[in-house]
Length: 525
Image (cartoon, rainbow, N blue to C red; front, top):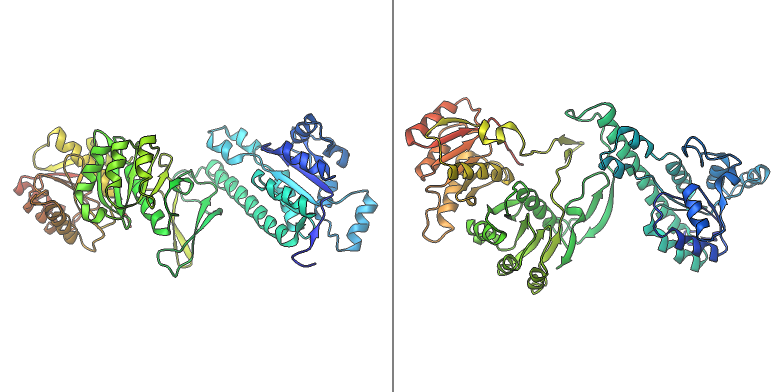
């Protein structure tokens, strides 16, 4: 049999939880003279549409039982799916047993992941673990030399097309089989992950085994560089996020667009007030809050307008016309937000190459994975919910207690610094970054860079003076803080924990600078 061999469809087994497009598919099958065998509510809906259906219990001679847990787990079903019709012995056994082969299987599975996501009770989740469906899908996929397997309403157009050409070719059946095995693998992965959390109660312990199932959404033009192949995938059990973003306009997203957009997306949703994050090469050019999005954008842009050119902008509020006008005035690669007004979209449409994305509110993953040679690393995400992230739990170890505005700036800076690559120093004033030292191999350079950028990127303004500083990790020596104190920083927040903390505390006290210790670190590599 060659890859172009087309097999006619004479008999189909149809069992679908998701009834989308079911009747239309049934009409097409009946019109083509195909016998339909079906189960339970699927058969009932087809019968209601006046379509001829053979009930599965008629084929098996056994009633659906145990509240539907047992209905297709029967030799009459699996023989029809698994018989190798290239073998005379298999064909003879079918005849001897009074069984018939299936040429097409149409199945979609119980909504297990959706049930778990709804917060349903354990017992309800268990009832949504499909057994018969995956068994049939795997059987048909194994025997794809003779059976075509359909696992989603999205594939029904392929069935209709096959009916016009006499059936599916072998290469088409192979493709459908590969997709079917990916579907059952993802389904099993979701069940295994849930069972690990629920039965082993590993809420605070890394799981003993990890299974990840992803399906390709689209190929990308290339990866970080033009010689690298790349694609975008959807992880089956992950909460919806950037991978599911709706692209309203602009060029196709690139690999680098996605990585920068994820950094911006993550950064801006750390804040409840109207916020903007501008990201370039996964680091912030500016991050700010405001009374509205326009003010937040203006403050974020002012931090580093040079680097913002060609950056990614993320908003945590629906975008209005004034904000859209401000963003469109500067070359921007990607703009992502939860929504846009009609006026905003009309303004952004004048920038044909600007990618405009609609994203849901950011949801952190249960676990973050990072591949290394021979394996991968797993960790919980770094969330702003630890005791050390609350100002009321910080320790004031030097200087005067700050006023409310300074306290607000310190809290903002501490949240914002976690989106800066380590070693990281972020200076802030009026709920906006004014200088950022990112990705340095020592904290002294990070301090020096943050001060330098604060004082040189705004015309004639020494913005470091009077600002506050946040450090993502402790200062090993007092030399870094001395750079901040000499620049006029009035308050600093850092984790503490260095053997030489007392040197830094003494230096802050001598300079009259407020110093808080959080006892929580925010490295970001």
